[in-house]
Image 1 (spheres, rainbow, N blue to C red):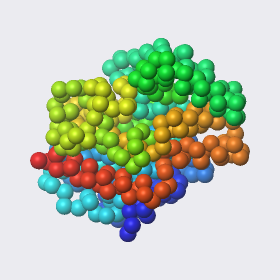
Image 2: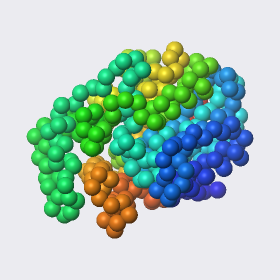
Image 3: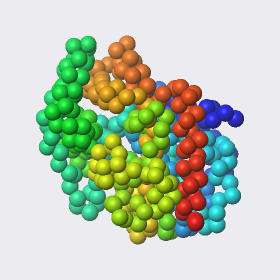
Image 4: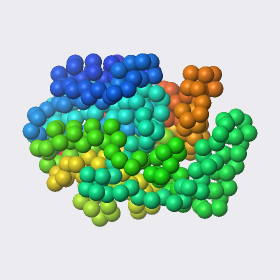
Length: 362
């Protein structure tokens, strides 16, 4: 079977492929229903597949669909991992937990965000400990021109001019922190992290409590796209510099691991990301959490697609000709349907997961 067959053209098909692959692998399957319907009117759910002893002390967790539309990549990797039998011959005392569609609404509707316009990868603040979301006062300056009233050639040109001017004025690092780093003040804006736990946050906290309570060593791989050179897989690690998890990540994966906090990645420092939420929920286990970030289009095009999609769901008509054009634009930004892209990133993702298993048990 070609690895291209593991990928899908819709959430509905991706989910069916995942469930079929999990069943063929004799995995224990659980589906956690989402309250809303999908783009095609289909049921939505986060689906779990567990392989290995339920009391395993070593667990490899993979997550797809955190940023909705990026689930096309993550789903293809998870389906391929199962279909190709990479789950076989696990080391002793080791299990796999595959979480498919952590943000099923965004996956189905072709959005990075969820049903509340939240970027769930900015939502995993320690609300349960009384933490409050970080402030991002710089976002207030850029918000008005990131949420235009119209979306036409003139509006697009204005947004592009404002972005160019802002990046030149404050520098790329400060601009990325303001625009991409996450904000919790403008619910209609981009990269909005919310002020309380969203559906996906609550669901994953529950999954951790029920599935990972016996684990002592956990590796978390969250699949993402949209940042970096075409097809290249960057391993972004947000553990503190000098910490045991960051040291282990570099022992397992070498120089492919980057630390935003140490200035080694184009990704800004982000509070409230999903995989660090898993690390918090699973204490005192030692959790090594990374995301694979696979490059697609130039960053300017990726950003513009996010702004366009935000406008569409605020003020446009999704099923209009304009709406469908915007949907094709954001899909291309996060899921290049180019066989050459999958030929680069698919084998690398398999290798990264194998290295994680070796590190967990070595």
